[in-house]
Image (cartoon, rainbow, N blue to C red; front, side, top):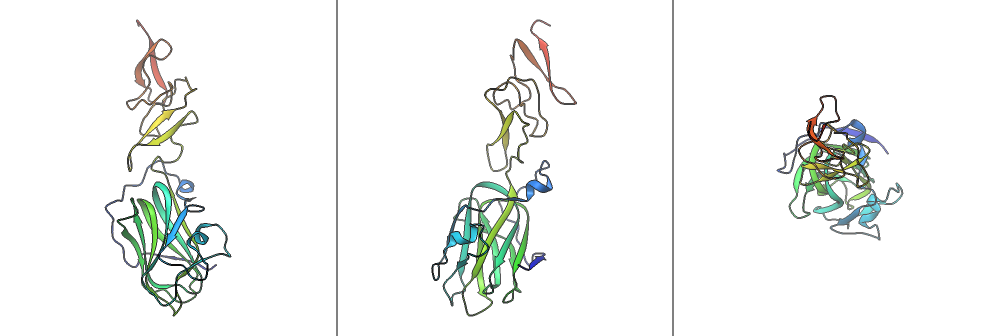
Amino acid sequence: YKIITLSPTASAQPTITSSESPSASPSAKNLLLSQGKTSTASSVNAGNIASFAVDGNPGSRWESVHGINDEWLQVDLGDIFHLYRVMTHWENACAKVYDIQVSNDGVSFTTVWSKSDGTFGMGAIESALGGVIGRYVRMQGIERASSYGYSIFELEVYGFSPCGGDGCGENGSCVRTGLTDHTCKCDEDWSGETCDTTCAGYCTGGGGVYPYGCATNLAGKVEYGCLPAGGCNYLSEGE
């Protein structure tokens, strides 16, 4: 493939955007979210179905019917994610004008990136999304670059969870409670006394969810807050 990185030729800030998570590392932002996920399309031509665009096989492709401009391909990521970039690996039959759109519900889509100067055989195009929030990602074709339809080898979506990856340490997991809100849930068999500050300051010790710091009444001790360097500060009962 030819790899071409472009700045958006037109963009609109969607209502579903969110500020970038401070705990997101460059490698986390590059997590491939779309491969093997459920994909659908407005039409299919010659058996080249939508799932071929997310199967990880560079030799298979989705193809729309020929002669129609208003066509789309979308993937359901299965959950809400911060979305950082989309790589659209075009076959020669590509779009001259198209949008990348995102949605939380698969019904209302918002354009977050646009291209208006595509050319036949342009190869792979990267769309920088900047961390917008969404579950569904759609390539919305507006104008074809040839008399054929649209044809895409792979539609790759990269990003990371609003939980910011495993921000709760090795003894807990991050649970999303809203579009961007999250909490740390300690593993059931964990009874340590460490407080993690990378996941919104939530406690990772004590065997439960503690939204305000360290656990109370842990092994005969009471919570006295988190230590500045991390860890929970406990006092024995009666002290």
